[in-house]
Amino acid sequence: MARLDEVCKLPGHQGIVWNVGWNQEGTILVSCGEDKTVRLWARNINSENNLWVCHSILSDGHQRTIRSVSFSPCNKLIASASFDGTCCIWEKKTNTDGNQYECTATLEGHENEVKCVAWSTSGSFLATCSRDKSVWIWEVGEDGEFECAAVLSAHTQDVKKVCWHPHQDIVASASYDNTVKLFCEEDDDWVCFGTLKSHDSTVWSLAFDSSGKNMATCSDDRTIKIWKEYLPGNEFGIATSDNTPTWKCICTLSGVHPRAIYDISWCHQTGLIATASGDDAIRIFRIDPESDPNAPTLEQLATVTRAHEQDVNSVAWNPVIPGLLASCSDDMHLKLWQYKG
Amino acid sequence: MTTKGIENVNPQRFVKKTKREVTIEEEDESVKDPIDEREIFDLLRDISDPEHPMSLEELNVVQITNIEVDDHKNSVKVFYTPTIPHCSMATLIGLSIKVCLLRSLPPRFKVEVNISPGSHASEEAVNKQLADKERVSAALENSNLLEVVNQCIVKSLE
Image (tube, rainbow over all chains, first blue to last red; front, side, top):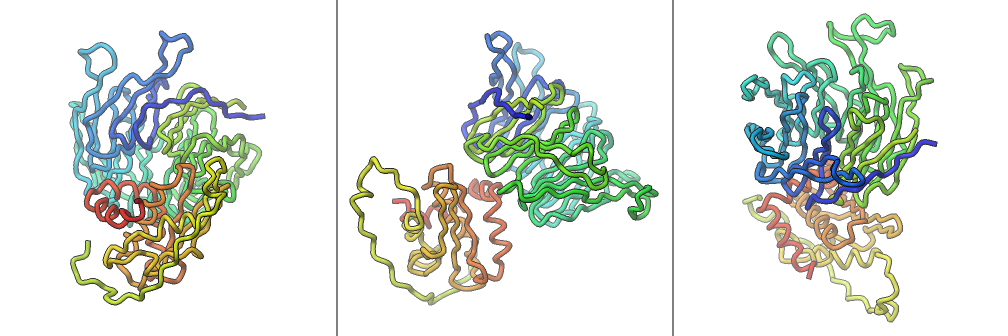
């Protein structure tokens, strides 16, 4: 019988916690929120129980709520995105003991609240998105400089989330306009090569599986959808235009979440899918391995109905420790969970 | 904020209900009161309209029959009726109702505020904004907007 057990509760934030993430080694948890801070949490190896504690608080970077935070693939930088319209880059100071970070760059340009920031797997790019309906691509220079490479205004409404493909420099964005769009670089220009339409309301978040050929999306319409990439000339007869791949919705899970689903995380190690919902619950699913890969079904493996005291805003699987999940909520807490299958 | 003249210059005015009588059970502190429609209505009735010196009750924007409460399921749903179908204050009024409830109710409650079906031209767009908690949160960080909302709900929070 599968279970999701609570490992610990991490209080500390003085307001809504909007986002959680991990570093590449899975040893540091990062969170951000309404209190305008980014907090870093790690296991205290000096304590008896190996408790997770907050070891750094990054403040004075932003003037308003910090909505999204992310570790770079090289592990040396943290990017934070805020309602103040900017994105900050934090770097670890090398001349101090302990874990002190300082803000070494501020990326400006968006016209209003920045909703999400994400690093490409290659480490070459950063993507940000905003209520100004645009997605910005930034090039990461070797000298620590960030240059805007593209301003993509393909969406017709507020863009909620950006997420990079696990292997290629392709970025997907989710929006209040109910669609997901895909962008890549073609002849030195960033273009939108696909629009995924199926949700009936705001798409809050998305996640790629480990292959990058499948995507999961979650929405205000209370459904999760699974999408699959079909390449030109595919054997299933799925039509593609020009030489670009097509993404098709191959599965919709409805009637399970009673409220909006704010975040979805797809573990690249275990294949488990976790959802964060407005009904205070966390649910764990996976694609039934016996089902048809072109028309799969989702198995619901575990549910914690009162995971938090209020809405769960974000969930993130640890990239190294299988089954370890972080969550955060309007109730100002973070929690760690261990999945046991 | 709009700088043009007031849209609905002569709104229809409705009679205020009398305050309800407090019963003995309600005075008893040891008995836990579930939250009901009447309590929500009492929270909302004195919210002022942003343009007229009248309450949402007097303008019939909020009515007790358009409130649904399920205390056990932690759910509160309010449907409000703008005075005219093209009322440009519709989103602001909805936001005031939402903020008033979020500040007054225990955090366990899920609050949904919607326009009464069929009563406004941009009903879907307004409902979608009010349902988006990230948008509501960001909007309330705007000090000008927050001030306007606070002015509308100040009497109801007394």
